[in-house]
Length: 175
Image (tube, rainbow, N blue to C red; front, side):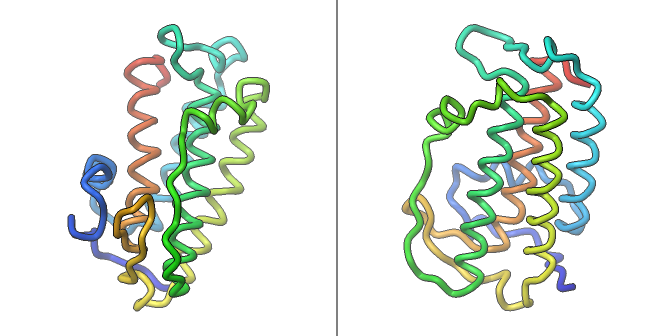
């Protein structure tokens, strides 16, 4: 198992991701990936179906849709990391998160089902990042028209979920 102890430098990712990277506490990113999904499960598993469907305002995502969005975004971030880590120089497209949420059907699923999928996706995420050779972490590719490193994608994956978990606590009253 290879570990990458270094936080990415700002030059390794687009400025739009700076908040996600900043939201990640110091530590081993692979350990943080594991701890984070445990914390999410602890907070979200006890929610009733009504709480899972809660929206803090008209037009905002439900709690279940937030979880579905986190699953989709993680798959995309990690797919980008895989391609770049393997030396694929093909520019990778962006994605429209609202379109994904609108067609995913997350609000029709149970929280237990979404959390099981999140566990599975996160297990794959951890396995991929843990398998990377030291030189793969610094490889750079293009995603959404901007250069990004594999290392940055690992921190962005953690930071993106941290961002949404903070919103769930602040706006949805999820403990």
